[in-house]
Length: 403
Ligand code: ASP
Ligand code: MG
Image 1 (tube, rainbow, N blue to C red):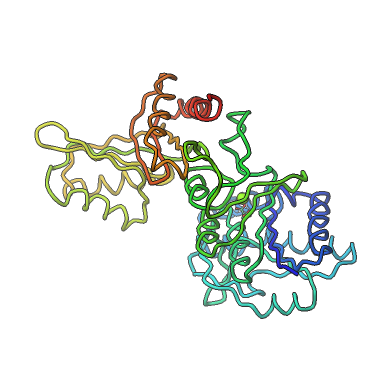
Image 2 (tube, rainbow, N blue to C red):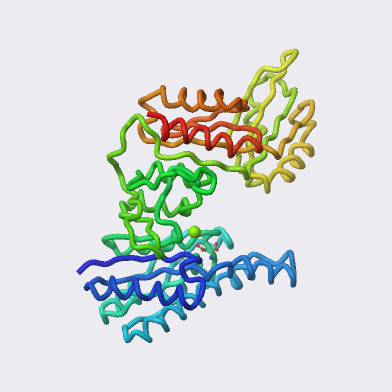
């Protein structure tokens, strides 16, 4: 008998019919003789609706109270799903994360799971009950509920799979797997049979929204076998694993991210310590910086250009301007209308032709590159926001349509 963790996303439990469908999948797995731990997200748009409700009452509500509110969405799902399974005559129990003992840090709205108590879930599994747990949340040292960040239920599922050494962690969603790019932009995007943890991690952090990126980090760390599957269609999904059979010369996928903005500090002194001062200041304000470029400007000055999340742009500009005298730059240029397109592939590092092929695709499409940034298995380019979708199409065609 094996233990399987099954996570169902918001669209998979959207309404009564979908919950019955999910109960059917769970029942099948259980009746095949497996132990099953289920993790659920809130139904449909519930989390967004709850945020809107809070804003109506107090747009500056504390993060603690927001977590109190948002964690209720998942509680509704687990109870309803348990009722559906009860209706089918199957033994089950729904549990909120605090009842299980999913211990988390106290950072409201962005907590991390620290450890998971075994007693309660194990006792239920020993009674042959299907255990249905609220995703997206934990309980901190003072007993307060904290949430794990949007999309965090994937992470709850992988953490449970790791804690209970599950044979498999299945992430059920409304698409049938991980695609080479967003099928809404490129209709002939292909479903991948498998992808490595590292590739998935890069894709998830470069804007592909299939999996919460911390869930992939955890899966890699604890070697959890992960599978992304459709809850609506019966067909094989995408397996996320350590190594795959993909040809080394090709890439796993193309991702885009339009949630970034670019800041350029023009006319900085060309002295040691300047970059340190700038980025130390931003990091002290919890502003994450992504792509960085330094170039020589006029008359012995230099320019430093970097990207931040759009939501941090205003604050970053404010902080830099407040410290203008200490940093001694001439002026700031900011651009909100940029985007990033990335290719990801495990074979990229050992094959420099891959990056050239990407640049060729952009050249042929007449798209100008503003900045380039790479990791071992990724090449990202910064572009005008309006070129982003065209770039994704051109690059995808170059790698997947040409022979
Ligand atoms: N319900 C939460 C959200 O909408 C968590 C999740 O779905 O994973 O972000
Ligand atoms: Mg999700």
